[in-house]
Every structure is written in C-alpha cells, then in structure tokens.
Length: 392
Image 1 (cartoon, one colour):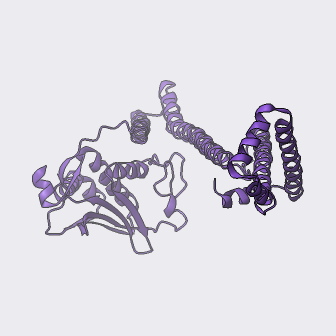
Image 2 (image 1 turned 180 degrees about the horizontal axis):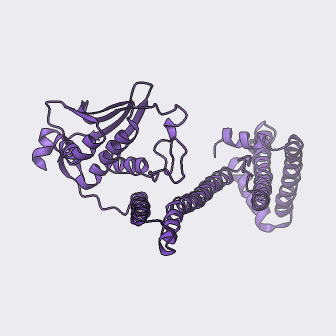
C-alpha cells in the first residue's frame, strides 16, 4: 500500500480519532525511546560486557573523537530518526486497529442489511462500506437479489400466463361444447319436427365439433412451439413454389368466396432454409384471414421479392382496417380484434400467435400494417445465396 492510498484511507476516519492516534503515537514513541535509553544505559553501567564494549569503542576511535561525536548534531538526528520510526510504527498499529474496527462495523452493517432484506425484499444494499472487499461483496449480493427478483417476476408472469391460458381455453372449449350438448340433447329427446330439422341440428353439432377440434389442435400446436418441442427440419425451400401450391390447394375455397388471388413474384430465385410443413402453416393462416376479413374488395395479393438479404413475402387483403390500438397485440395468443369470443366466433385466437412463433423459429420476422385501404402482413425470411444453396 503506497503513502497516497494510506493517507486517503486515514482521511476516511473521523478527525478526532486521527488526532488521538497521532497524539498517542507521539506519546508512546517518547515513552518507548525513554525506556529503551534507560535500558541501554543501565545495561552499560551494570554489565561487565556493556562497560567493556564502551571501553573498547573509546579505545578504538579515541576519546577526543568520541567526545566530538557526542557533542555534535548527529546524536540529535539519530534520536529524531528513531523517534520518527517508532512514531510511524505506533501510528500504523492504530491505523490497522481502526481499519479492523471499520471492517467489522461494515460487516455488521451488511449483516443487518441482509436481515432487513428478509423483511423488506424491496431493500437494495448501497455500497457505502469503506472496505473494497465488502463493496464487491455488496455488489455481488445486489446482483443475486436482482437475479432473484427477475426469476420471481418471470415465475409470476408464467403463473399469470398459465391462469390466463386456462381461463381462455376453458371459455373457448365451453362455448362450442355447450352448443354441441344442447343440440344433441334436442336430438336424444326427440325435440325436432321432422328429419330436415334433425339434419339441421346434426350439421350444427358437427360444425361446433369441427371448431372444437381445430381449437384443440391450435392449442397443442401453440404449446409445442412455445415449449420448443417442435422438431424443425430445415431444408432448402423454394418460396415461389410453396406459395403457388398454397394458392392452388385453396383455389376452390377462393372461388367459392368469389375472391380473386393475384400472385406477384420477382425473377430472382427465392430460396430459404426452412421446414416446409411448419412454414406453410404460417401462410395458410394469413390466407385464411385474408379470405375471412378482406370483404371490402374481394381481392388478395400475394407478393414475394428480395429485400436486401431477406425474402419478403406480403399477403395483402382489402377489408376493414385493424384499429391502431390493436396492431401491437395482433400476434398475442387469444387476441381478437373484434373481441368476439361468443358462439359466432370461428377463430381460436391462436393462429397469428402460432405463425409468429414459427417465423421466429426460422430466425425471421412477421409484421402487420393496416389502413383504410388495405392490410398487409409481411414475412421476412433469410435468403440462401447461390454458394449456400450449392453447399446444401
């Protein structure tokens, strides 16, 4: 420890303790030198060895030279240096004692703060301790507390999410199930006029059963994606071919709803590394939503192009705009813009949440923009270069 650090740490002590330490060090130094001097003189006067050593010293250097030395300034300087050395020694002892006292005081304060945290978890330890080791220990404790707070918050969020999931699933399962039970009850109790009404009841029960089955499928798929239980098998995938097949497979549904689907693809090869079975689920959902909500202008535009090093796929529909307040929540599970969760709702509220999770599994991004003219869902996927395609 250098003098600067020593003085700095001494300066941290109270002024009266420092003054007391200096006075006591000076007093003890004087007393110690006085005792040492008397002990040496007594040893010389009473000991044959001591007196003999003095006699030999005088004989060696001469009596006159010894007298010159004794009456010169050297004895005074020697006493002054001796006093200073002993003074520093005692001052260092007081410093070490004060340092130890401050350490244990800070340690006790740290223990007290730790006990306070047990009763008040919001307490944060402030590193006011003078010992650098205690400061580091305090900072480490604060890091542990911060980590614990984060884990507790995550646990609370997980519990809240689980409760919300159970509530929403219970609601969505109960609604179609109630309808199914109601219509089946009418059938089993023969409360129908004729076979036409019987068939009508059976068709409604079948539709509700289909909705229930789709909801359960979506729920299992969403849970699998969120828990990273899906096995993603990525292979080079031609986006233009996949989108073309998607439109062709839904051609009958598109024509039945009297929609027109326009496909626009750039001339560049659009190849990405993806799991086709999962990725098709994303665009099936976007196409289904476009057919469901794009009733203002029965047209769907599907565009695919290169955007820097990404493939950009846009699914554009022309219907009522999504309110600006709903846009940030559109990809949340069970979120529905029309807030309809009754018997007339055909959506599980999980489709877009599943789509977002699948896109993120492919290290991509999905966005939505909506205005009075159109609603655009944009999907960004990494594009494979020619060299990467050849390596695959």
